[in-house]
Each structure stands twice: as C-alpha cells, then as structure tokens.
Image 1 (tube, rainbow, N blue to C red):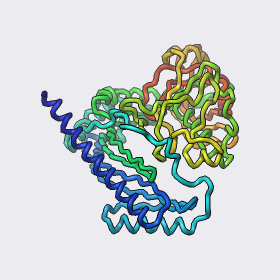
Image 2: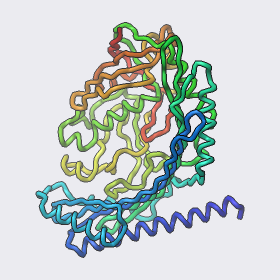
Image 3: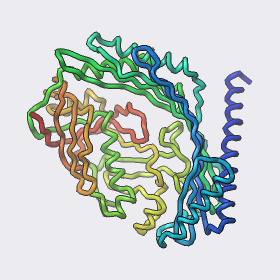
Image 4: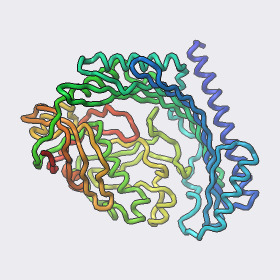
Length: 456
C-alpha cells in the first residue's frame, strides 16, 4: 500500500466514525421525541469546521477558524408541527429542545399539509458515494502564502492597478446527518475550498474594482493561484474608461458570471412556496413552452464532487436526476413534501433547493456569441434587486461592454437592462459553452434577443 493509499484509507475510516457518531445521535434524539409523546419526528444534526485567511497588501489582516454544531428538531402531534434548535450537545439541552418543540406543536393549529414525507420516498440501501470529502490539511501559514501569491499576481498584472481589497483562502469541512420516524437515517460529509481576490484600478480620476475566484470540493480542483490573480487584474483593467450608452432596444449577452442568475429566477418561480402562495409569474406553468425547443435544463444531484450534490433532500427524500425543462417545455416544479401537499402534488425531492442545475448549450464560445450579438451589450455585472417574482418584470442596473459589428468596443457602466422574464426565456437566441463558473447552478453565457437598454 502506498503512503497516499494509506492516508486515503485512514480518512475513510475517520469519516465512517464521524458519520456513525452523528447518525447515532440522531437516533437517540428521535427516541427521546417518541418517548416524550411525539407521533413522529425528524432531526437534522450538523458539525462543521473551517479556516479563512485574508491577506491585504501582503500582510495577514484576519484569520478566522470556526467550529460549529447544530441540532434541529421537528416534532408532529397529528398535523400540528413544532420546531426548535440548539447548539448544545448535552443530554439536558437536547431533552429541553425536544420539550420546547412539543410545547410549540401543542399550540399550533392543525395543518393538513404538515408531516413527514412519505416513507416510500426515502432512500433504500446504501447511499451513493458522491466523492464530496477531500480535506485539504492546509495551515494558517500556507493559506496566507497562497493568498499573497494570488494578490501579487493581481497587483502585478498592470501598473494601473493601484490598490487591493484583499485575497482570501478558505477551507471548510462539514458533516450532516438527518433522520426521521420512518426509520431512515442518512449522513453526508463534504468539503469546500476556495481562493478569491479583488483589486482596484485607476485612470484619469476614474476607479474600477473587480474580482476573481475559484472553488471546489478538493484543493486539486482549484484553478492555479497565479491564474486567479491575473484574471482579477485583467477584469479590473478592462473596465477602465467605462461610460453610459444611449437608450436603445438591443440584444443583450449575459456573461457566464451573471447568467446563472437568470436560471435562479426560474427556480424561484417554480418553487413550491411561491406557487402555493400564488406569488409567481409561472403559476400553472407546468407543460408550457417557456424556452425555444432546443433548450434542456436538467438537475444532476449525484454529480461526483458537485457543489450541489446530495443523496437526499432536507425531507430525507431520495434525490434523482430529472429535467426541469425538456425541449423548452417546463416539465417539473421544485417541491418539498409540504409544498407538494399544498398543491395536491408529489414532492420532487427538492426540499432545500435544487442540486447541480445544468442548461444545454449551442456549442458557441464567448467570441462566437459576441460575433452573433453584432450590436448590443455584453453584461458582466448586475446591480440591484429589480426583479418582480409575481409579474416576471425584470429591470436591473448593469455594467459590461458595448459590442459593435461583432467586436467589443468599450466598457459600459450606469445602464439598466429591462424586459420580462417570460420574454427573455422565449427570446433566448443562443447559449454558450463557456460554463466556467462553478456552483450549484451552472450555465454558459446567454444571448437574449431584444431588451430595453436605458442609458444616457
């Protein structure tokens, strides 16, 4: 056995012990809830530890080392629900928290939608290994040195970069366990590491700020440190000389940095809470043609090392791959057990949100998309919260680059892009293959045909 294989085996044994300990704690709390009179209960237990080291101008500014734990306990008395939480692991604190949840439930009104998810929806057999646990083992000194290198690469990119907002190295690891009275208890251990930097550039009295980052489950998945710094420098300098542009109706290309937000608005609109409250512009949208026929939007909860991967949702329901949009048609909502009951439907395994959402692409890189744009705006930054989830009206401050004859002309700032999300989805002219930004929702740049641009 090699040294690396030995370390891997030891890590697996340690992880197994951690998970077993948390699962045992969940089982004990469920037993306490049953003994205290709960008809049913569900328990979530989490432990996490992390390190964050921030460097500015080569000097360590802050070091944050965290270690947290939490116990969330929900009990049901018929269709009455009570929830309470604590960070104290002592038996007395756990018993007091269970008593508090039961007392809350006694005073709650009956809710026909309350209760555990159906037992048949729980995972059966061993949970899939999603390869989420990759401890870094980095210490404060090593983290600080990486941040220094990253910041130096950003500051050294161009002489017009005059200041730094700092560079931060982060590393975290968490263990989460969930169980309920159906007999299901499951746990997952995951790590998340990252590096980021932000710098400021100036020219002729004008100042611009931008940043770059990299994130992944394992340190080996992170982008090269110097490359992150250079990208931050390049992005910042490119914004110098930005100015408004005249009001017009033009195509708008949302770069991959901001494009995921457009899918986020879709997820919000088809989430159960907004649907049963009737606060969504996509009420009764299931089966409707929202996008061009070529568009597919899929959820991949079992993606290895995925930042949104999970074997079960917050209700303990087993996750599974599915289409949210198939051939442009909305084919699934995003539902928890509770919201599904409120709507007379079945949970989609999305209590707590979506897991690794991906949109299909048209095989075009960013230069090809800019060429296809012709004349219009490339948006690289969005500001404000001007999205109405009830009507779908979209109006946000934006910055980016003006494109003329298929070529970037000059940076742009102090403009507003406006339309309606239904129209934006329907008028999706092209989807890029530049899926460079990691996250739970990932997509390439999106070219929208015909938005109102309000400028000078």
